[in-house]
Image (cartoon, rainbow, N blue to C red; front, side, top):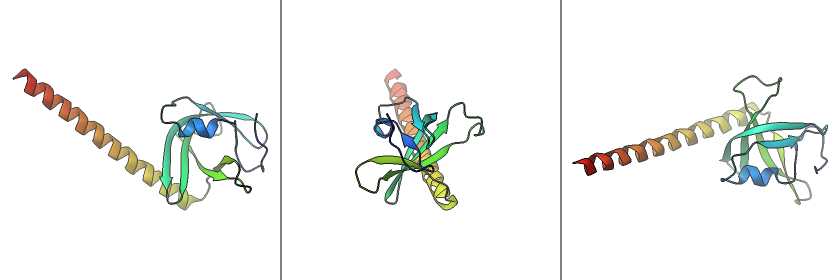
Length: 129
């Protein structure tokens, strides 16, 4: 089931936003466009920025999108404040800010993983002595 909205907005299946926001969910997400056509996306990241939450999704098998490209959506609340939906971000300044924030988040996560790995290796070295 999908909700009807204007043509330029992306319509989600009922649980798509919940699935995207669920840190335990690594499944792809199916979204419906304004024409009712399904599009499958791989989840890349959720980026909180300013007062908004952005979602970076990579289209699966979409000939209109080049390999390695992603689409940025913002989670919006409808005019009646009843339902959330995803809206494609087209503003270049916002796109740049989202990708900059994502890059920073990614680098911080890599540092944490590397520190944890180094600590684990150090522990293993100490226990061998």
